[in-house]
Amino acid sequence: MNARVTRPIRIGLLGAGVVGEGILQVLSDHAGSIERRMGTAIEVRRVVARDSGKPRSPRCEGLLSFDPDDVLADPEIDVVVEVMGGLEPAGDYVRRAIEAGKSVVTANKALLAEHGHALIELSEERGVDLYFEAAVAGGIPVIRVLREALASDTVVALRGIVNGTSNYILSEMKERGLDFAEALSGAQAAGYAEADPTLDVGGGDATHKLAILAMLAFGAQLRPEDIPTEGISDVAALDIQMAARFGYVIKPLAVGAELPDGSLDLRVHPALVPDSSVLASISGALNVVVLEGKMLGPCLLSGYGAGALPTAMSVVSDIVDVGRNLVVGASGRVPQRAWRGEHLSKRAVAAPGRHVCRWYLRFSVLDRPGVLARIAGVLGAFDVSIEQMLQQGRGPDSDEPVHVVMLTHEAREVDVRHALREIEMLRGMVARARALRIES
Ligand code: HSE
Image 1 (cartoon, rainbow, N blue to C red):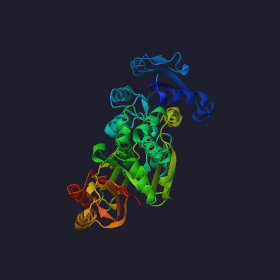
Image 2: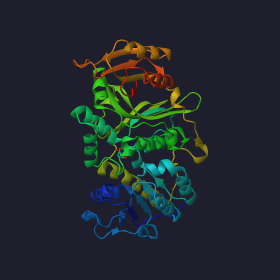
Image 3: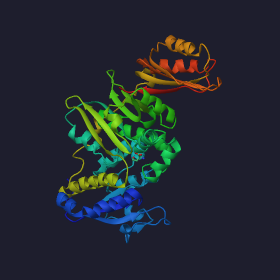
Image 4: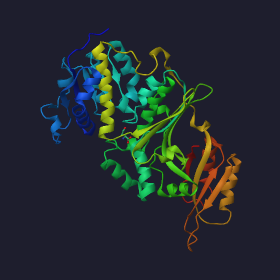
């Protein structure tokens, strides 16, 4: 039992960007209701920013510092809130805070995906809390649901859209006919994208989040680099239009399921989903996570996965949780990883080639006799069966490439990839084939 804290909970903020400012707003606008729920107030002692040249909100007045030691070495601070992002120096600061006996709240999914197990073990040893609700799907309380509400169930599968930037880009490309670059600029202007947007559009951000979800849902210890990942930057406006002609929408998915042999099917990639499905209806910067519990059945959680106030609300809810523990002199009642440490295990991720699904294939070809027959022949030789097909007509110029789109029946990924490699070497092919999974 730790000593009970009866005075206000004192926090130090590392990061004064849009989320940092959002946290100050939530703490100030909801100060009264937070105190009534928690039993004491939250007092912000210091806000540490990195860049002294940037203008700051008046909320930072009298709190601003550029020296992290003003937070890490202040013995009066109970909770360090890390919203700087990136692996370092954030990782070093979080480690130092825990070693100094402070609880930590962080929204840093990259840090948790890469070093979360070590940091959580350190916090357990030190008897402090490390909470991270805002690290996955921003404002959506999915971590609490997995950690607490589903503690009596078995999660058999999860499927989500967990990168708001990618969802925003694909939605804008579809709804407003924008090209990729225009839609990415819009996402950056709206504050959804990471400082380095390749983490968003390359799928890395979703992979970090999926690694955290797999830890909570399946008790899996994995490295994010074990998760097969494809970003959205190769999705062309043409694919979005073609998918629509077949009744599908292209969405940036993160998928996880436990396979009968105990390995995990984990994947991050864009995929076609039926336009009547729930996943298709989650547009713009909205996120969604659909959990499938053995007892519960499906459970859908949707909301804003990015943006200052939804993310700040999540961070502050963690500060309230830590504060509640401090008020009663406790920590570690609910395992931060949802499972007690000794029951987490390293789990194999199924090789992507084993995955079986229907496929969307697009070929750019010269419109010559026999081209289609040759493509179909190679697909057949690899056991990939065509279900539907569409060829775009061309103008009078017979050297103008045409697009041929095929939807296949279920096929193993390894067979599809081998077939595509052979097809790309056929006479009449003018560009690399595009392949997207169809998620039923
Ligand atoms: N860049 C992230 C996204 C922000 O677009 O979802 C929240 O993690």
